[in-house]
Amino acid sequence: MDTLMIGLFQEHAEAELAITQLMHAGFSREAMSVFYVNPQGQHALHPIGGDEDESPGTHEASSGAATGALKGGGTGALLGALTLPLLGPAGAVLGAAVGAYGGALVGALNKMEEPEAAVAETAVAENSAVANVSRGAGILLAVAVATPAKREEALEILREHAQEIEEATGELRNGDWIDFDPLRPKKLIF
Image 1 (cartoon, rainbow, N blue to C red):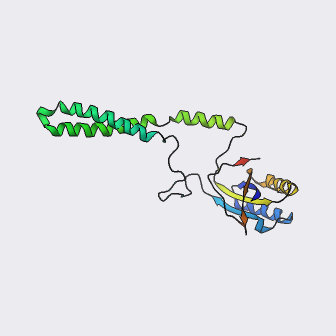
Image 2 (image 1 turned 60 degrees about the vertical axis):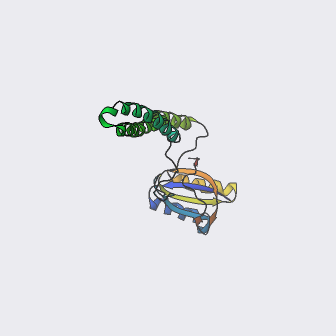
Image 3 (image 1 turned 90 degrees about the vertical axis):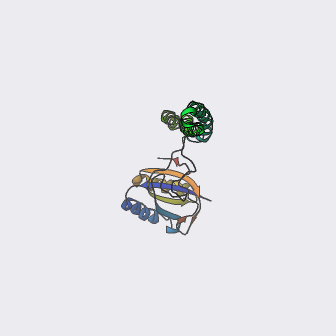
């Protein structure tokens, strides 16, 4: 595993200028990887798109849906039983089905985290000294640094051109960052 200094750029010309300066400073092109990172949610890690197995805040929705379906189904069956003289047994079945559907919907929605709660959690993380920041879109330039002196040299060059600088560990092979994970939180330096 290499120690990597990573710069985020919005323009390709700035990244190319940083690459040129890094090469003049003695870094080999094979020790650098430059690539574009798509906006969050567009990395197509799943067949139907997206990056995560479930949306944040919805992990309790299934239990809420089950509870709601049971309560709604029972209530609907009772209300449907009142229509027995008019609709016969179909009224009870129809009432149970409609009640279960409505109850499942309401139960799932009630179990999901409120947007305000998610915003509050984000604010707490942002105020933390060790906050991990999610990765934004842009051009990334990763440079493998072998020594503390090379780290400082790369950092100085990246500070001139990059919008953000982070530090990570990873494996660069022939100019490719082969174990890059766009969902891994970044450790910002600058």
